[in-house]
Image 1 (tube, one colour):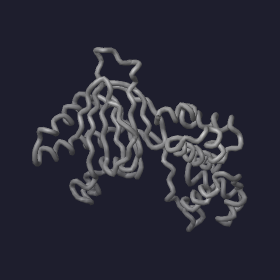
Image 2 (image 1 turned 135 degrees about the horizontal axis):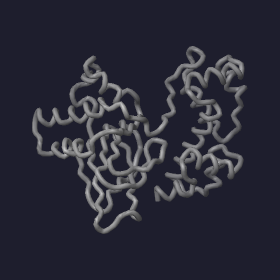
Image 3 (image 1 turned 90 degrees about the vertical axis):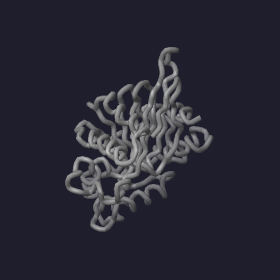
Image 4 (image 1 turned 120 degrees about the vertical axis):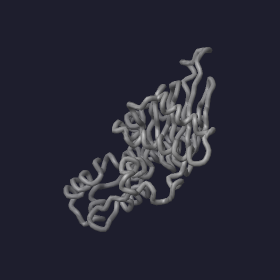
Length: 267
């Protein structure tokens, strides 16, 4: 467990293989999680699954000399009580917290102080008491119906056309991001007409194929903006956009800020 306090509790960009529970006991700012950029404020509670990239950046402009940020962070492995513990019928409410890989959840309606009291008691607890505290914390989360995903992961385990899973479609798109992708070619992979493919894809994924391609291109652009110093125009072209204006407009709609502002957040 980590207890971060001070005028700046910013958490740098990182990924880890444990679940992470974060309580914002005081403070505000912005954070990047999965494929979304959000704002955080005092009282927010987040549960991040293993493998979800994230960082938190405090809003220094809003800080006064008397203010102090305070984050309480708990990392744990789902298997800390055994691989099948949370699959038991009596833990149905908890199981939903671990039901989707790459998921990040936010919670509302929790009592900040009571949750903080449980978390801050962990370092002094030993033996079974520590395990019980963790279970009480998870039970409080599992019993809370007001939880929502922080970002929309691109799922690839959906079967389309019988044996063809969405990861095959994703691979096809990823290999052709710089090129124009035609619905006729993708539909042919599944031996479907364009109309049937579009309808089936929307029913299976909840999004249109065009939206799916745009999301993949923007995620590719995000990776380039984070890891390279390529000019924005080259990022746009490498991500398959033939119009710089369209790229910036779509990026801002999906991410809430411009590509330039996104890159500065990782500088």
